[in-house]
Image 1 (tube, rainbow, N blue to C red):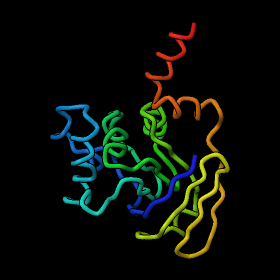
Image 2 (cartoon, rainbow, N blue to C red):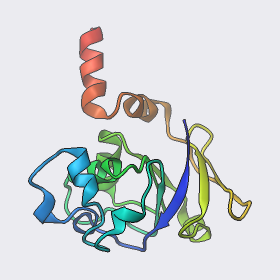
Image 3 (cartoon, rainbow, N blue to C red):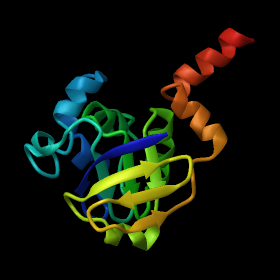
Image 4 (cartoon, one colour):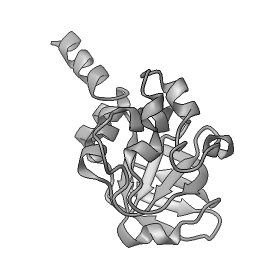
Length: 165
């Protein structure tokens, strides 16, 4: 799985209410949630994002409530991958359950900047920064998690397993 896009950098401790504020939780439609993604952080943020862009975050991304709407909003905004120093535990699980790719890179997140052109090789656990020429290695997504991602999330994965049984 390879992805290429522009980096959109956010800071530390971005909570789920910043990702998708409570006033937009009247739907689970990815397009509607995506249209309001990051409204709690920066109104109009979504206007800078193109399909396939990559979100880069600091420490503890996705902290706060356990709402599944947050990863759905990111996917609905066209972001297939989030790279962060670290993720809040519940967001990490929810992200994969909703089919969102999450990569932890620790302190290397500071080497990525807003506007950098990135190529992400999920299978190899490699992030190429085409803007700076640098490469960041991280743990690749484990095979069982890739199966969930390939099906579009946990619910489609379980449905496929049950249909095959």
